[in-house]
Length: 110
Image (cartoon, rainbow, N blue to C red; front, side, top):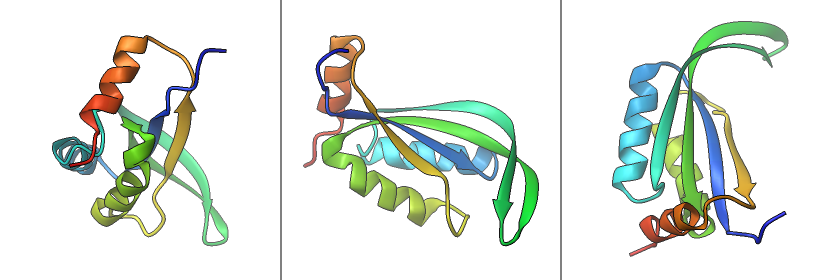
């Protein structure tokens, strides 16, 4: 296990490619995330409002710093079409130190 880098891998599902691209462009442009990867179309099966639902979505991965994580979550919720969007933050505990330092540098507030 490597040293704690204080950066996060943020997994988001969006209704479609256009929504995923909008979220990606906004949050990267606002420096809330250092980068975004649209993983493409996925099939989701989930429990919602008392029943099993299925649908096509687009998976999106963002990388951010601890300093911007809460603001990123709030901004995604503002931009997202879902009442309760999937936004999951996983701490990155190891990796290429240069890349992880770049994430922190690109998401510095102000």
